[in-house]
Length: 89
Image 1 (tube, helix red, strand yellow):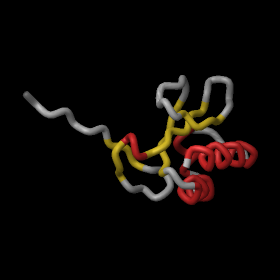
Image 2 (tube, one colour):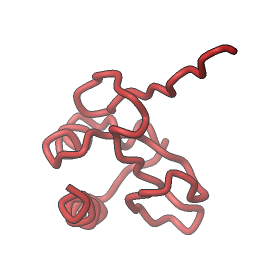
Image 3 (cartoon, helix red, strand yellow):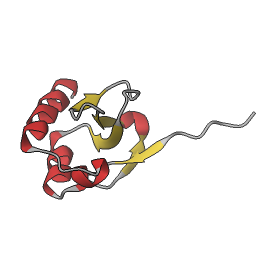
Image 4 (cartoon, one colour):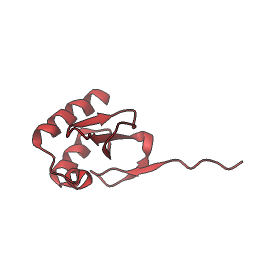
């Protein structure tokens, strides 16, 4: 029997490739909101970051978050995401 491949994703902050379950999915919903998606199945465009606020802040600072979502991410959304990431960590 073949072994299943482990899904890999890249953190948009530090650019390290890690197993999908080690990262947090950030989702930009069709309603225009930004949230942490712990289940990884929420509707919307997703991006992955490490489970620390430093990578999320770097992704915002370097515009990687905006490029991933193909829209400008407001500072208020970053504040909400940082709170949600700290609750998960």
